[in-house]
Length: 187
Image (cartoon, rainbow, N blue to C red; front, side):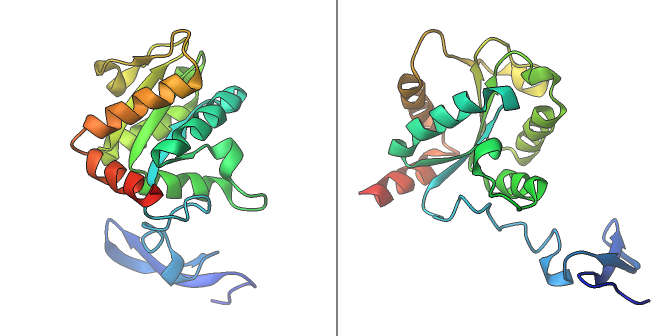
């Protein structure tokens, strides 16, 4: 089998059982499994707390504003529409962020429940078992995450919501140690 420029011959597996070889655009040592712990480009400091911020595209400004307010608490957000560098494969960066996040924030603006992308992100977070915070901003959470009380924005500013998110993460047994370490690294 001749490979084209940029193509690599890698092992093919079905349910963990060797099933021959296939062509891939990545060498075998950079396949999905090897990249499992590689964070997206904007998460370069492993000491920071990593929060995936799920949102619909038309509300990326709200997600970005909240991300900027979380920085002071040692929390680095990932906002796909803002944090992925030009020419980078965007879906791979989203998957890296989902694999390496410490917590997940779902911004429930109107239309969030209808987005196939946000619903897949929510499913990934549920499957990983990370802390999920639902921020109600016009739409209630649906599906598996609707069983937990949502954080309501009300008429509060992003700074106030960020402070409450910090408080929630600081109390949670699954996130408090990593968050405390991230805050210590700020000093």
